[in-house]
Length: 125
Image (cartoon, rainbow, N blue to C red; front, side):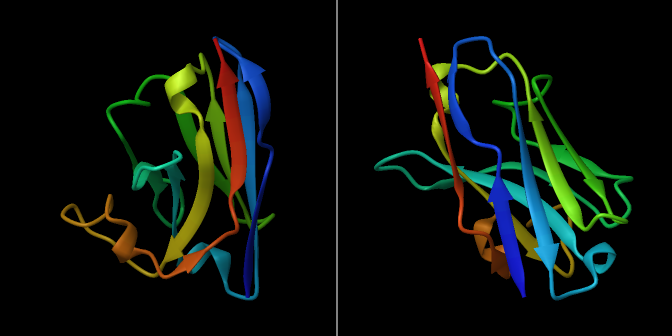
């Protein structure tokens, strides 16, 4: 029962990265998947969420238009394509999993049950 995030790194302002989160131990398609991030000294913030078959996505305002969340249920993998990265995107990025969400709770970290270990994204100016 694991979520393994990868793909982070050190990039420059305006660059792109794609994060991946490999899931195992549960039926991937039965879970809503999300990305959160935490900068040093700050709380863990919502980034994006995608529902079971990818038909519905939600984004934080700060990443809307730059980040794209997607999933491949055949590969049990979640993705976060991050374009036009900015220094304020620097954080540890976590993938998370939950059986269900609704419009009132999708952005709350407490709504997610299972968490990956995080991958560091650093954007230099």
